[in-house]
Length: 394
Ligand code: LMR
Image (cartoon, rainbow, N blue to C red; front, side, top):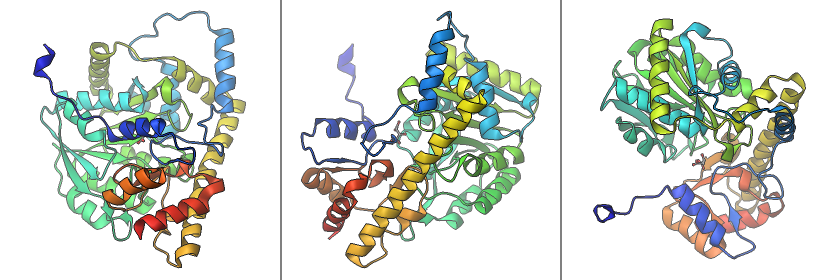
């Protein structure tokens, strides 16, 4: 049987994670996988999560199946959080996803059934898993320009040059906020333009919303998603609770489908449930229930929002400090873009051989396209990191 197989390509993010773990150097720096870290380098369990988990454990009476659609209270709280009531609830259907990736998987498979072999446009660059994920769903990925390596900002003219030419048969995958890997995000005015373009062309938006609250705040980060779903008759949103609730391994996410009307929505719902049942049957409930409890309780919700704000502000501070340290040392503003980017990532624009040297010689780990996770910047060693980066770029 297995003699017919050849080795599959593993995701570079997880390959790097394993390399970092195996590196014995004590002064190594992990700017790789996108997980939030505190000043001790730990990815903490949020205190609102701990309290909700405790409450859940004390009151839970069963571990029986929840059902294919998953935890409905979790889904509806997430729909309110992400969409803010801009779409009539009668047009929305949800299932829980196995994390944000699982939500994307369900949505992509439903789209693959609706448009077998259909074109899906993905930003260049994008999260590396987007391509294999949509291919596995029977869609054909194409790219649209996104990042201008010269300015390190969005090349909006080039992006719209492609988006404006799409047709109702095309799907476009958008990062709702905090673009991964570049950190270059869209302004509210640019989102307005995208929403108007989609309404005009009829292209179908699939929005990956994995970092809500990591950029400029929940409301600001939800702007683009809300603007788009309010402007078009049909859309999909994949929400992840991995980052903003720190629930990575619990795999809590929501697949949201918005249809033209309730009858269509029911059909999409049946398709989502069918994809889930045939793949993983049902999603884990542990993280979903934690989020449901937090979002449904005023005090816990306030505590979570305060913790999320603290995480966001820490990442902003790290961006500013690293940009400042590099500016001071180099007398140049080449890395000032770090402070202008938002969310968890920045694409530094370094060649692959420089990235490899940083890893091998200096123990500084980043993805080979030079994406860094800013939460991994060690606050007490920023000068040292700036020195290593400047030495590597020569
Ligand atoms: C990342 O981009 O590093 C994270 O989203 C983790 C992942 O699943 O790739």
